Image (cartoon, rainbow, N blue to C red; front, top):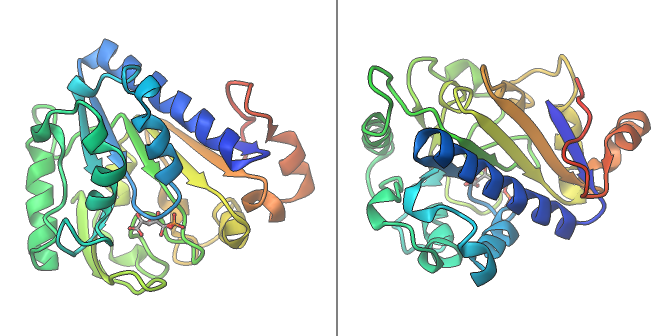
Length: 264
Ligand code: 6PG
């Protein structure tokens, strides 16, 4: 695992955009397609904006990219709380991705129906013989309560190992509670997972997520451990403010070195 601590959110987003471009082009060169999983919430928005800028659009192989969601609130696609709707407004409508390569959750179904429909959608993109695709990159956020995707504190014991999608009800801030989420089983099959974490309100959750031995019922992000891939944390100085000094200075990143030191 690597942790990169950036002095400013701008540096973090710049590095994140660079990582997405690199991983996308590597995936297409190796396998002919780039399977990208997006998160909702506020944190990824500046990254989406960057990727949508005209000078960046041509750097990504959009024609070979498939986009999925790590989680979705069960609302219609044009509801402003829809993670798909947000990504479409800020990013997808500005880039030349074929419509059929955008794979949103059906937010108007009942939770169990939405989960099984999404599992079916994923199965259709899987390599032969596998139940779900191996994603090239999963972008995740972290809630102030420690959740990631819609894997909330207290649900670790309920998550299936043999299904890629799980339906649940969980209140967080004023966001819609009925949700579906990718499971750790699906996320942990990915080639690369990058958490983006900014702001002081995430400092406690980040510290818990990075504390070896912390319970995944309390710190569900600890369930994210790619089995055969990489895990990186891109965090800004405010989010990192409660990490112990030793780790923070060892892993300090000014945005120009390729990777932080490993931690954990
Ligand atoms: C969602 C997200 C969720 C998000 C965190 C952090 O649907 O709410 O996918 O997991 O990443 O809640 O949200 P912020 O980035 O807004 O802090």
